[in-house]
Image (cartoon, rainbow, N blue to C red):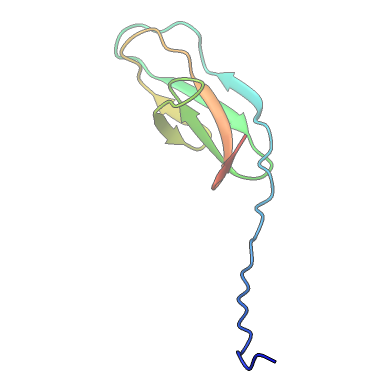
Amino acid sequence: TSACPLFTATTSVALNSAPSTPSNVATSTNLLCRNQSVSLSAGCSNGVITWYNQATDGTALGTGSPFIHTPASTTTYYVTCNNAPCES
């Protein structure tokens, strides 16, 4: 019979709730002149609205709604609900 003690370890994993899909996405205008700004808006029932410059692996341009941005050229904006580390 072995007299070695039995050691155990435990850990917990918490699951974040999935962020919602952005809703009511809108722009103040679809046509700008140089050096003008656009106001972007969207809703998010849980999480933080985050605006990107491309659909995947893009740069976050900012957060919140409305989000005011002055593009340097023709731009397509992408929006997610971010409930770190989960994103819609």
